[in-house]
Image (cartoon, one colour):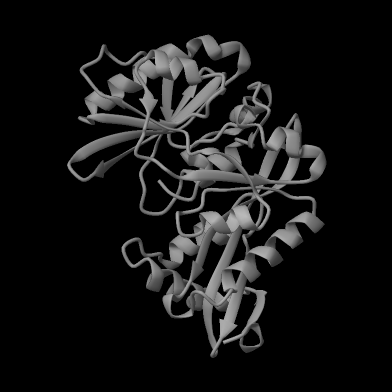
Length: 312
């Protein structure tokens, strides 16, 4: 089979059932529902996802998805794309489809001066190296054993949703690069179908989000997001101590998070007992216009959490 036997085209709304069928054929252990599709690919606050597909033998057999993001780069909001759901049907692998999709997608991003980031799986990792993305860092996964803690402090208020007061925190957080954490983004991200999140506001100077889940025999609490106004960074240790107490109350025996090396909170996480998860061997890649690459390729500039991914 050669490329003349198949075509690349943008996906349309009419492809929804076929896209779901392809995803659920490839990953039946984590199936998507129509609700999941609508939340993740149609309702994002920066606009609907951009999707390319390969059509062959009257079927969709390969998929390349980029969800749109408002990316904060050195004080400016830039159009951003997170590439995810890079999939090819097992019967059609090894025919150059993924490479053709990657080349076409990246070319369009460059035409539009878009910034991008991605967390590929091990099967597609080298595709990003070959197609011109920059390897940013290993996934900055940290973990900490949970032991009985002091009582939870009362400066953090649990909320059902974030209001517009949250919008003032991210621009003054002193973080050079990351997806902008507005109320619209946070409320969308932490309404993922089938998941339960606990959202907290810290006196108009910060917020954090937690999620509990089982990992085999382990009960895990994950810190999905934590952002503080720059003037409030001194609260970070108290917040993490409080989160450890919440984890103990929830009977979790492991606390996890993502915090890049060089991030202004990283040393605080290490001070309270977090250490690198050596089992995680995934990498993060980035790309963007030439004038922004010095910022985009500096791992210490980024705020990256599980809130930036399409999982958890």
